[in-house]
Length: 252
Image (cartoon, rainbow, N blue to C red):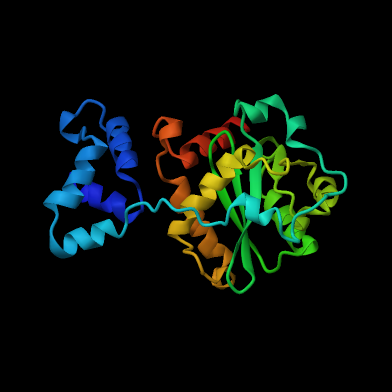
């Protein structure tokens, strides 16, 4: 079993995710039932030398990538969006995660004035990353429109976004995709926990100071795949990919 644990650590799974996956994958085999605390102990106590150093490098990071929401709200990129519809108007099915199709999005900004758009689906926690060459509203909107057209309407009903000026022409996005756009209320960072958690996980792949412009869309897709193939405790140790594929199948 040690090689299985080591392999999952190389894919940036946390010990808790590994333990949950083992329990779900081998429900009747006690030899594969290992508490996540035991995995931690084996890393920090039993492992030695190069093996220990190599495996520890793959443990999950806990720091978030973005600056605090209180900081970004004070920059010129945040302000009044004409015709913005508050998150309070979002359908109840989005709020309670009852059905798929409701997404949260934001720009992840880093060095050299580089950024990517991050999108996470609330029901399945499925992640999509979109390459954007600039944070001006036309560039971001065009990229989001192109990405949205890859999914069936049943899987993309709404998008909730930060009040950044990159979504100033949100009505054009809705006109082109028939997807409604809602906005978080100012000074309420708790409303965006799902997206903020996703951005924190992305720090493993895009450390602070990274030039995001060097990443192709193919590379961003590969990173998103890594996140989507990790089991999540909140999904009863299923993966976002499994949940999302179930949603795709149900749409016919």
